[in-house]
Image 1 (cartoon, rainbow, N blue to C red):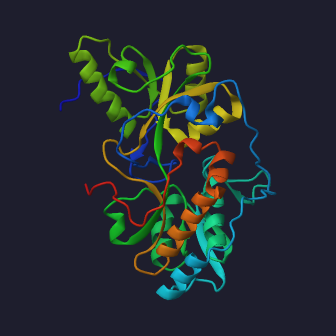
Image 2 (tube, rainbow, N blue to C red):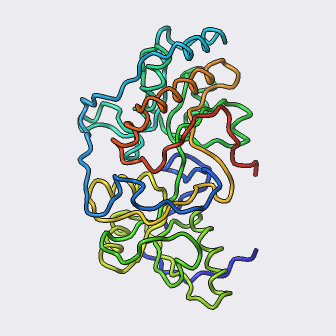
Length: 335
């Protein structure tokens, strides 16, 4: 399908976010293929008018999981040996709230991904050993034996599955957010964006979604989208708050966190990051090292016991919950 040339407002440069290139700091990573919108009420942390005070201090009092005998038995049977005896060494990229960041002591690693790592380590009966690294460095670190596992917004792709095993733990979403008192209540299909001024990243999958919708709308005689690009998040936020933009369309995790923190925006629709393909965010480890089955068992125990839901809720990410962790789910296709 041809993409109609966009009507764009370029403000302060272009915010480039490449599909399937890295964590949210560098990319939007794919998720499930359904394009159904998630009602704003589904994520309590993103409800307009309400705010959440996040714990950004070093004393996290993380949600903990009891040791899961089945998970322990799985890694014992597989012959898996952690890099450091008695510990699970997990790499995280601490650069974007609420996924991974440093606490206000500038030393302690915190965030949703560190809490997920804690649940996994607990379930496996191992001590958690968190290690920070740039997102782009995790593949070599896993392959070289520096880290046992990564929990840092990694999407499953068919190409990555050649080298790594994965256990899913989150649905990666793109979210439409509008001003808290906006009359826009739902964005679920092409006609819902007709004539809107939308802040979006250039070159991203969300931009591609808008472009396809835009073509459909124009063919149907509806008004085109007015694309707005920013290289500064604060400027983009101001555009929505001032009414110069109607909505933002980008990674849900960061937008959900901001909405929960300040109550100035509300969620009106979510779509899969890999749309129209199917992929999930997952914990990753070296292929065939015997770890991943135990990881998935531990995650499912946390899902069943409610600890998983507690972690997502404390970081404003309840809209990204999954019902079951699976080993090596279908990933984004090879390019």
